[in-house]
Amino acid sequence: MLFYDLDFFAGFTSINLLLMSIILFSNFKLKYKYNILCLFLIFLIGMVAESLGVNYALIFGDYEYGKNLGFKILGVPILIGVNWVLLTAISGNIAAFLTKSKSVTLTVIIGALLMLVIDFVMEPIAPKLDMWRFENLIVPHSNYIGWLIIGLFTQIIYNLLFQEKETIVSVNLYTAFFLFFSLLNLI
Image (cartoon, rainbow, N blue to C red; front, side):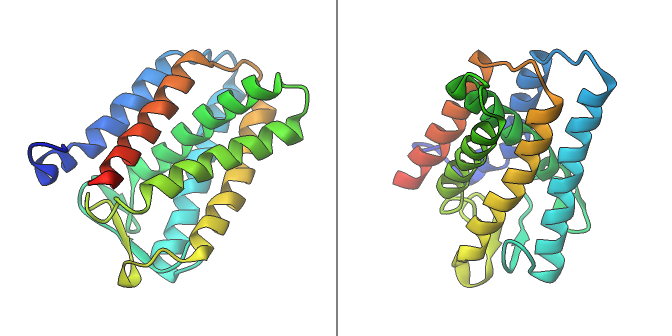
């Protein structure tokens, strides 16, 4: 993407997110029905929050999604809901590893902060990749506050309903997310 054609490769963003999700979920141990319910609930929370943002400028600010994330429901790409699940899971898994799961509260806070770090590196490059863009290309503070609040909710759900965490794939995917968007921000 850095050396060839940014626009061409940006069109594959949705495929990349889908592949990352498949990699993570193929390493999950979905032992119980409530694990699937948990993932669906996180997906739903992400989609509802994003729909409120896109349609009413609530939670995150005034923004709209571009074309590179695929099919939309109420103005929100389905992959954004998947992305909320993916980022919640990998951040929650890393946070549980860092805290050794001794404190659910600390794990939830660290997980939400890890999600916020990814948002910080995604926001500057997102408009260039035609993923989303805020009004006047200015990311409001409400976006980061909203990410933290929604991240706290999804982390609570994830950490209460998922007892077995997967660390190795989560660290690799988080690192890939972070490096990908950080390097693109350099151009």
